[in-house]
Each structure stands twice: as structure tokens, then as C-alpha cells.
Image (tube, rainbow, N blue to C red; front, side):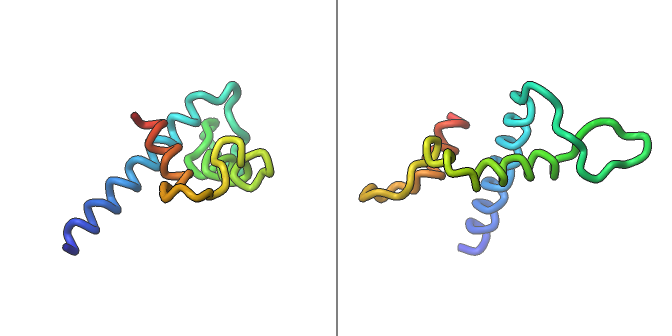
Length: 85
């Protein structure tokens, strides 16, 4: 049982990482690098994560992931699964 939980957690983390990079690839412009590093011009994973977090806090986010209704399916999980299908 514990092995399954670890495997499931790893799979979900890999899916989340993949979705984050897919989101980054679809951005029209590269995001601003928050923590600049000398010699590096590209953005970091944390920069994309910050953009996604800000979008999730936006009131319009409910258009993408509607609030929970009487459906037993978690709307955020349903959207993520539709994106990777």
C-alpha cells in the first residue's frame, strides 16, 4: 500500500511538472526572471509556478476551474486530466 502511495505521488508530481512546462511553452513572451543569475537569461521553473499561482488567485480562474458543485468529481483534477489526455 505504501509503495502505491509513493508511486501515485511521483506520477502526480511528474504530471504537474509536465503541465507547468507545457503552460510555459504556450506563453507568448518569456516571463521576467524573478531571481536574476549572472550569465543566465532564461526563466526558471519557479517563474512559471509564480505565474500559475497568480492566475489561480484571479477571480476569473473560476471560468477554467468552476467551483465545486454537486458533482463528486474534483473540478481542478478534471481540468488537469483533460489537459494531459
